[in-house]
Length: 366
Image (cartoon, rainbow, N blue to C red):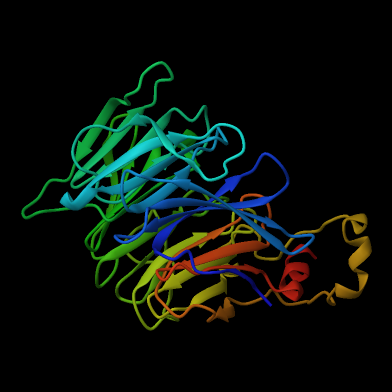
């Protein structure tokens, strides 16, 4: 059975994994509340003893709409938040020192410029100094200088067209030496080259309604997943964007989040306003359609769990549907420490931690 954390006593939609100082599995959760102080919850899960530990940082700047952990510095995170009653959305880089226990996440560097509309994305590799933010119709590339209390705007690009065009989500590709970023606005997905901030591809009418989220396949450099208000999840090859490579229609309401597994890209997580989390096996478009081998000693204590080797490759399918949530699931993500463990977050503040079914785990490994 899953291990769940009691309600965070506030609305929540911001979730991100983080690499901890120890072997603990860590997730960061940001709250949204008008009644309570907004907080950053640092959730450490002890998988061996099945114990969850929680520490809290106050986030006095406002309601947290998006949270992202630095890939280079375990003590630094970025938040996108509503600034007071004005509902003006801003972002900050914050740092904590020592053991984070009922302290305050003090902003260490503020992103200045137009109000932020949705998200902040760190460069996947490097020294953690480059960040992409989305501000209404602008893509902004920031340089986080250590000696300054302000982020320096390195370059930017803007949407062109009629009406009030606004970004809804963005994702930095881990491929192409981190020079590619994908964004979504309305029903359109666009690719950008961060060196020139020029558009590299455009998928018009990618979804029948608003595109909510994007994620790059970590092992196949041209593959991109998207989800939206048309209840669909689609997979694209950015070299040919006339039609999606695959499409899923398993959810019955808006799909807010889609995430590839970092190690085994056939595993795809989605969360939806239908209060469900779905784990899918998209093996036909993965980098390992026939699985791969591991040493016998890696599974010496799990001999009884080994399935018989199949002569036929597995087919795309829904592995499991999780219905522990009673409210809209706004965020799902994989642990950065354990490729077989993931978390989901619903607006009522309920965080649920689950594992990939053991039978599938060993089928993939064998």
